[in-house]
Length: 184
Image (cartoon, rainbow, N blue to C red; front, side, top):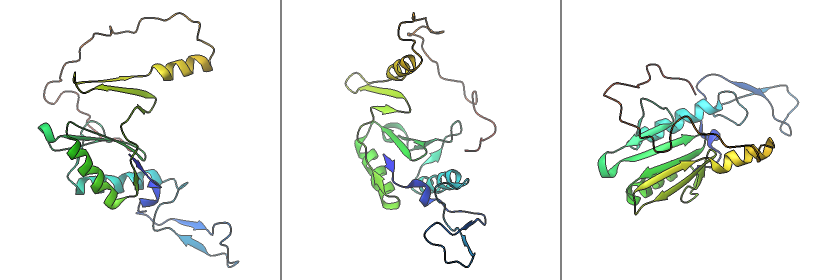
């Protein structure tokens, strides 16, 4: 899902002034006071994030303690994970009904464009098999693009530091939690 002109939804919390934009000058030398964020404003990404986070909290999401780009709502079969990268949003749930509900609520607040089932995201190829219950992320295409860019297509492959069958285990309660929140 894509939020159309996302930065324009951000609300500027401090006083910011700008010169009159080209084509709108009235010759008086007056400046414009911004009430909302615009593209190119240094604060625009943070203003947008704050506006989105507020909207998500309003519909029942809570921010992850480990990653500020991850929001969670519900639990068990009705768990919905929402991952944000600027104006691109990925929704995950075992329930299509839950995903449709979240999309509907977001569309009530923002102009959104549904991009269908995710196949690629941030250079990662997403594969899923719902019958077998697995989701696989890999960067093969991205790696091939980099190899081609730097003329490394003929180079010998090397083994990764971990075997491909390496299994992750769940952290004990309280382990791995970030102590201070970073700024976006």
